[in-house]
Image (cartoon, rainbow, N blue to C red):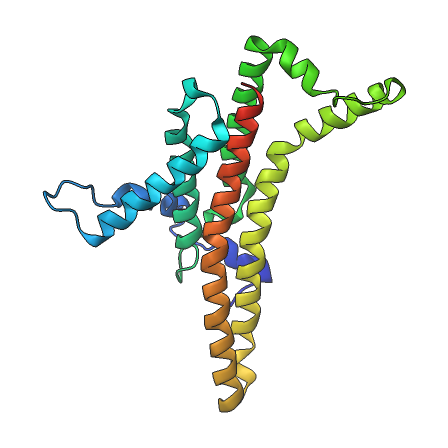
Length: 223
C-alpha cells in the first residue's frame, strides 16, 4: 500500500543497491541494424531519425552546424524512450524527476551560453535589447530578457516533469477507485484508462519533441 499519492514515483528496490534508475539505460539494449535486409522496425526507426533530422536542420539554419542534428535527435530519442518506459507497470518513471530533466537541460544550456558569450559577444548583447524598443525602457528590457534567459533550463525541466507527473497521477487516482465500483462502472473506468493511456503515449512523444525543439532554438540563437 502506498504511503501517499506521490510514492508511486519512488518505488523501492534492493536495500543496498537501488535499481530505480536502471530504466534510463534501456535504450542501449535496442538491437542494432546489423541485418542485411532491414526489418519493418528498422525502417520505422530510420524514417523517424531522418524526419527529426530534417526538422532540426531547418531550425539550426547555419550550414556549418548541420552535424548538431545528431545531438538533438539523440536527445529526442532518449527522452521519448524514457517517457514510454514510465508507462509500463512497475517501471520507475525517471523523466518525472527534476534530477533527470535538469541533468539534460542545464548542462546543454550552460554550454550554449558559454559558446555564445565567448564567440558571439556582440550578438548576445544585442539579443538582450529588442529592436526598435524605446530608450527609456532599455534597462527594464535588459533585466526581463536576462531573467527569461536564465530561467530557460528550469522551465524546460519543469515542463517535462509536470506533464509526466500529471498523467501518471490521474492514472493512479483512477486505478485506486476501481475496487469500490460495480461491474458496469468498472468497465467504464477501464475504457477511460485505456483512452488516457493512449493520450499519455502521445504526450510522451510530444514532450520529447518540445524539449528537443526548444533546445535546438536556444542553440540557434547563440550562432
